[in-house]
Image (tube, rainbow, N blue to C red; front, top):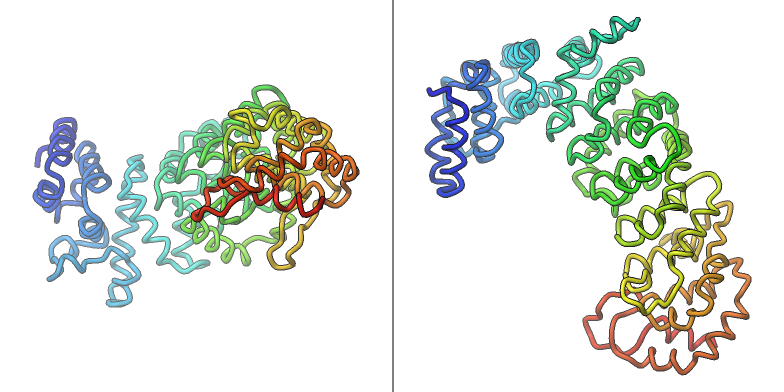
Length: 489
């Protein structure tokens, strides 16, 4: 074996990119039978993990990972490599008598790398997950594994400084940024005691923001939201690091960046929206359901109480951001979703935020770039005008309390252009204003619409987009919202 890591990387990248599966099927099998020796070598370990993470097929990964389970998996190959599995549960189910030697060998190899501070390997993280998933919660085996990754509590300042250099700190930081590793941390947080959870989260004090924007790391934050009973401590550990302690322009900018980012927004929206399907993909929901099932026996606080306490901690910063950055947020679908969820679900004074959104929606709705021209902008305004979320079960809108009163604020800003609004793709906004509970300008709005009846009739007869801004498959004539308004006149 050649251990010149840089040369190997150059060779692999150049050849795998140009020759793909052909070169992969030649190179990867050369590592079979050598995993234990290579993974402990200071240079060869990086080559092996590069091969495992970036080159090997899923089947080749399984063959390589199996070698963590003992010498027999390195020496004896399966008759049909295509059927080889690295799922330890399947292997133990087939050969339960091998459980003890396999688990001991796996734990020993994991411990070796942790003590050497060689904790950045994807292969190690996959191996750790397989070990943890095959322990029984509450047993000595499971508890000792948690001890391996949980930093020791520090009782004084000197010990805290020393603790920052513990192997467990580096391990936890590395684990969070891979798929299997983040799941290990999430399970550890869920099964641990309150004291241990505090120690695990403390390991991330300098990397909270990086976690929020990472496709794997954010799961650690969401799990912490779900299992921490001490939400005050959680707010200090996560929110203070993520968006800052005090209200300021810098804090608003951080919230804006999170709200506008595909992954970052989860860290601020999850307490408000929970497991909404528009926010979380199915793969995320499966992991969250796993955590929710476990926490029934490991956490004491009611989930809804915990969620509301987190919402309270985030509300002020989020409302301030909407109040100062409404125009920026309205430019993207993520920003509009953020506005809707925060204004419907937050606590505190929402008047400035509501006024800023209404002001940002003022002006001629027919101008390019106006919020009325975007489907996501129209949906957001429509939701706020209604003052709550539509419940498909009851077929009614569930109003938030206290009422937003956005329809009255909004009408004051768009009164001069309300007929133009009624002729755009966001025409249902005007329909909903007429139907919204507590709208005090209904007579005036009807008067304005009667004056613009000619424009409404023209819009109702034109072919084009529907009232949600989506192109119709069939050329059904007319603006749906304009038609509905004409029926009301």
